Image (cartoon, rainbow, N blue to C red; front, top):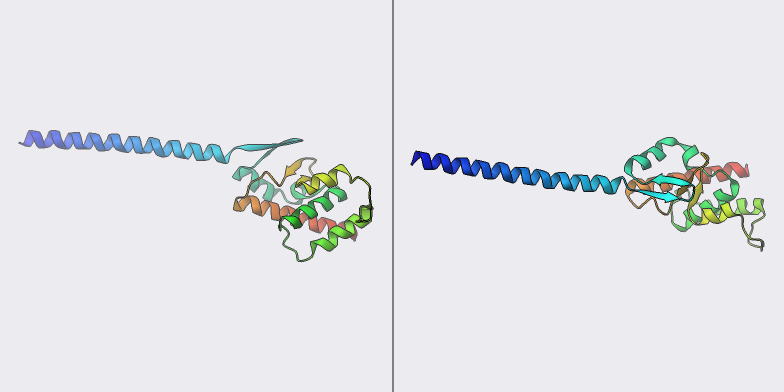
Length: 165
């Protein structure tokens, strides 16, 4: 009887160890899959811009040079994009955008084809102060991505006000 109990206990223990290993492998697979999803990147026209948590955090930490427009025309386009997508935390960005367009000669009466960097800004393509391009459309909708977008829009708005000063 004691031998049967020992064998039964040994089998139960072996079964639980096997089940635990299987569960650990399953968790490992799930974590690996999640990590792979998080580290996927998107490609912009001028290079690769990551949308992983590390890439987005790096953008936030980089300051204004990584999230500011490198031209006044791109800033005007980005401001329009930001207003359309409700990403500007300030109360009246439209006034700044309109003044920038007037200063650039791109006001509502102008029939000229707008410059490429303005058109890119309208599409959410931020030509940054670091000579790179950040596509605000493709960096995602996570809370961290939304924070990056809002910070970029706020930087560009401040930049627009400096252009007008």
